[in-house]
Amino acid sequence: MLRVAVPNKGALSEAASSMLAEAGYRQRRDSRELVLVDPENEIEFFFLRPRDIAVYVGSGTLDVGITGRDLFLDAQVKAEELLQLGFGASTFRFAGPVADFSSVAQLEGKRVATSYEGLLKDYLAERGITAAVVRLDGAVESSVRLGVADAIADVVETGNTLRAAGMEIFGDPILKSEAVLIGRAGVEPPAGLDVLLRRLQGVLVARQYVMMDYDIRKDLVDEAAALTPGLESPTVSPLRDSDWVAVRSMVRRNQTNRVMDELYELGARAILVSTIHACRI
Image 1 (cartoon, one colour):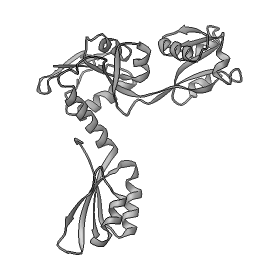
Image 2 (tube, helix red, strand yellow):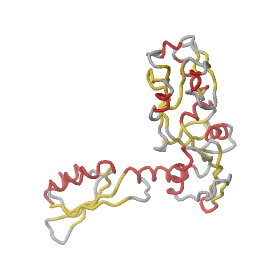
Image 3 (cartoon, rainbow, N blue to C red):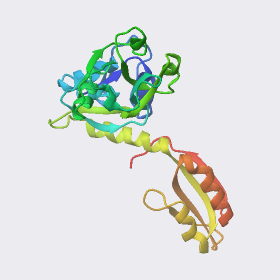
Image 4 (cartoon, rainbow, N blue to C red):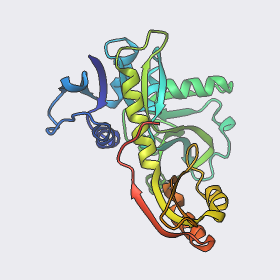
C-alpha cells in the first residue's frame, strides 16, 4: 500500500483532505483518527503535524506527504517536490520596526527571529550575510519588542499582525510557499504513486476549468475555436440545421464570463457552462 502523510491540523489540513476526497480517496470523519486505511484504493493515510511530515518522508518511513513548501525546505531532508497543489499560498518575508531596515544587507550582525531556522540560515548564507538566527516556535512578532531580536523572518499573509506590532516588511520575499506533494529523493517511485499523481492533477484541472458548450454557424467555427481552443482542440458536432454546429471545449474558470460575452458577440447561442467534477488529462 502507498503510505501518505496528511496534515492533521492547521491551515493545510482541511484543504488537503478535501482534495484527496475529490480525488476519490476515503478521508477521516473524526479528527482524532491518526491512521486511515483505504483498501479499495490500496492507500494508507497518516495524519501528522505539518512540520513533521517532511521528516517522515525524507527518512523513508512514509512514501509521500502533503505539506507546505516552507516547512519542507526548512526540514532540510532528502526529499523532493513532486506536485504543486494550488492551496495554502503564503509568502515568507523579513520584517522589522518601522523605518529601521530598508534592505536585507542591513541585517549584517543583527539578530533575526524565526520559526524556520534552516530555511533562513540557507537564505542568509547564500547572500553572504552573517546574522544570528534566533529560533522560536511561535509569536515571532513579539521578539523585537521583548528584546530577543532586531528583526524577524516569518510567513506573511495580510500583514495586519505585523502592523499591529509596529513593524513593516522590507526586502524581497524570501520564499513563496504553497501546499506541495513531496516524495523521497533518489529512490524508485513507490507502487501507486503514479495513480495518486494522476488523480491529484485531475482535481487541479477540474478546479481550474469548466466545460463550455455552444451553438454557432459553420462559417464562424474558426473564430469561435480561437476563443475556446481547449486543451488540445474543441469538439465540433453537426446539428440538424446544416448551417450550424455544436462546439464543446474546456475553458479556464476565471475567464468564463469574458469568453461567454465574446462568443455571444461573435454570434454563438445556447452558451452553457458546466462544472468538471473529475478528469484525466
